[in-house]
Image 1 (cartoon, rainbow, N blue to C red):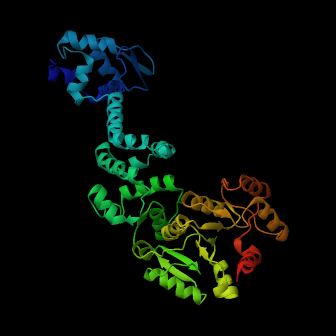
Image 2 (image 1 turned 135 degrees about the vertical axis):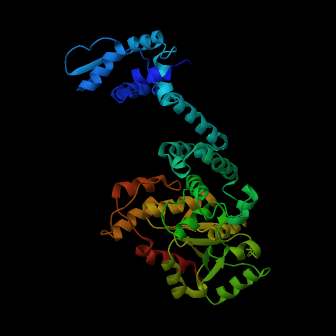
Length: 416
């Protein structure tokens, strides 16, 4: 570029022509051509005089001031103020111009590159497709990592994690993080933990929500354990064999009709060895087990309580018994939360309904006509599709405690 800066500043670099230079620069940044006329409303006398000096003629009378940019370009070239014309003159006066469109396209390419590893990982997991689309739509990554350069290692680490989840057998979170991405504390907190938890919910159906307990349950749903003691299973009269300390403890407590709490540590390192075949009843709420222990004691059939969302310990325990050809019979709350718990359980172990069908729901409604309304969004009931339809039609919830007498009656009928 050839420019006579003193002359250029006299013509175009004065305070009175600053508005013109600024408008031209903005057109250049937007990728717009300079073959147009710019108009300034309410120009003052000094601005009109500056344009007169630039164009070599007085502007037309009126309140507005019009400046044809092709004429300015020609004047700058012919005068030698800037032989490359108006665009080059603006660069000489104000510095390099970056095209906003070009910058946006370059930024978009940089983000695509940052997401490339994750896109490949998700392509192999169709169940994550909706989650991946929502991840882009919500802009979560861009809030957690402000630039593509900051996001790239984060998304690459996530791409290494997701193909390995859910994990079976379960493993501690820190061990998994160390083996997968080389940092035992990478999933303790921060952007990577946030994104991984979000993906785990999509993979497992775990519920979002605040609190350490919900966070622990979400990790556990993917087979990742914050520790092996907090994940527990509550059982009553479940035979465990005599070959392990845990099994012998279950036998002793069953003889006394006392509920037992099993930790995941026990189930992973000293698991009971159930006899082949059998039937275990599974409930959602501890009130059922307490009432069964009080009423039937050692005579109660084997009973397992999920205590809400099934823990990793409970799922692992029930898998042990399902693999030993046990029949699991399940009952839960007749509401959308209870349905989701049952569906999650069914995804891990087979079970048959225990008073948990559309017919049972209708009978419970007849017996308890004044229950509260259903809350939350509807869900499917794959073990009995008619149940979901009936729940939607009636719009009322029946909690497990309301049908406690019928459940205890079933258990009492089976007691020796």
